[in-house]
Image 1 (spheres, rainbow, N blue to C red):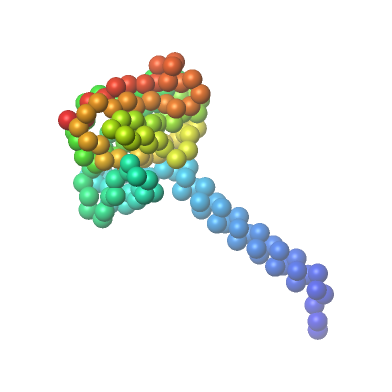
Image 2 (tube, helix red, strand yellow):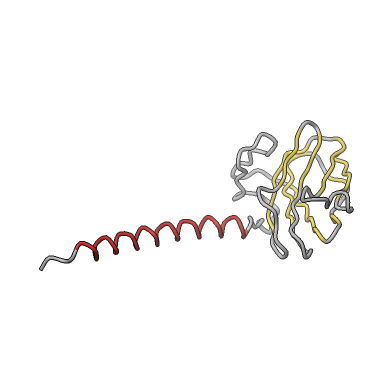
Length: 153
């Protein structure tokens, strides 16, 4: 028995829609969940997007982990860090959207997307010795106190 053409087209439309929805959900969950760091502080599974300022981190590249807390309106983290590959584990404990940016030595890098309250993400950078500025680039947050000067040794 021959099935009506409109049922077949509806089935294909539904299948394509579900496939697209599934792929979009995977992509969104990866962005929202951030990257978790292993307990030993190594960044085996962190794969930076290849931006010029980001470190090319291989399978066993060691990194120092720095925990960063963003609140309304402050950045809380150590102000002296070792030079080399740093994995900034950034958590938004505020009530507003925030982001995290590192600037200095001809480099300016931030998280790929703003963090909603309760979200976290990881930014991996290779920092040279010197003075660096860290701040929240969202709206006027830097002017409201979300900035620090850090020293990399």
